[in-house]
Amino acid sequence: MKKNEFLETYCEEVTPFSFYRDLFPTGSFERKGHFEDNKPNGILIEFEDDGKAKRETITDDLEALCKPRKGFTIFSPISYYGYQRSGINARFIYAMTFDLDGVGMPQIKDLLHQMKNNVIPTATYIANSGNGLHLYYVFKEPIPMYPQNQKYLKAVKYALTKRVWNGYTSTIEQPQVQGVLQGFRVVGSPSKFGVEYPVRVFRHGERFTLQELIDFIPDIDFSGLDEVRALEKQSKISLEQAKKKYPEWYERRIEKGEKRGRWTVKRDLYDWWLARIRKEIQVGHRYYGIMTLAIYAKKCGIDEDELRKDAFSLLEPYEGKTIDDNNHFEKQHIIDALELYNEDYVTFPRNDIAKLTGLRIDSNKRNGRKQDVHLERARAVQNIDYPQGEWRNKDGRPSAREDILNAYKKNPKATVNQICEATGYKKSVVYKYKK
Image (cartoon, rainbow, N blue to C red; front, side, top):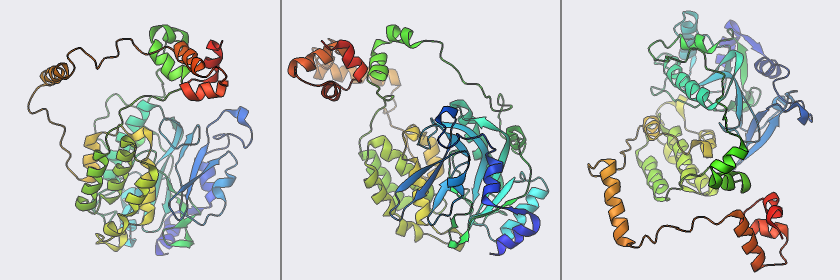
């Protein structure tokens, strides 16, 4: 492809292994089979023809990352604990990466010109993914992915995307802003044009500190950031203290092992949003329409199979909106967007969803009443419906001991496993109260 030939002239092409070894130096991940290393790993995702994801752990030898692939495969410059590419599992981020779509020869020439003249930062690596480019800004030192850090990194990436993605570097007018956890086509794997045209990568610039990237967006207020703080707020309270101070929380989260609670919203929200993005979404927002559908699906308890069916039903109408040949809407866009079917994103801000999709979302109305007045009226209605306060559970929640003893009363010959299944408690708790 002409873009590769042009990049070869101004940059140095490197092998997939050389690229990933530079990105993840030896010792970044756990050695294969050495669980005692207690280190995070990379997570690669390869998508099958039906859109289902196959996850693969990448250890320190990078062997699995660099083997030949036939399908659409993505990988993020982040290390994780566990098997899910979620914010809560993320440990370190090694590079900030931007997916620049709608890049032809005029745009790639202007991109390098802007980098040369410090209009935008010079990417450490540039990967040719087909119709677009992936710009890797590799950090001098990996940044811990603590929750507060992720908040700052998101703000930096949003602001830099709007600077890098401009009228001269892309034929697509609306920048497609992506999160910091976003995965990108694996170098050496098939590009959008197929196996015959693998993703190739070229070394172009130096490594960065986060502050050096922030210097390119002076119009954004990052006061108090300086460098992203590598400090994690540690709780001062022990589990023993928590058991005494918050007995219900301890029983629910520690003894029963339940996940953090949240409201499950009625599916009306999901159906309403699906109808809106089917009819109202515009070019430049199609990816985000499906991304936010995935968020609402998780929020509303919609099954993943139903979500995938609904999302892929949008492929043909969304592609029908295409105006620019460099901006086709493809199956890979849907697969990528569905990655946000994840608990980490159920609290994604409504304003961000509106901004990304270009669709206005009005807040729930209280008919002009202030919150305290609104709640007072709601309680008044509740008291009319339940004059004796029947809606309250005045006896409180049964204790673990009561639950387990009652279960044994109903089935004296039950095994520990059966009691665990009936009550939801862990074996250690059942043994504690077993007669």
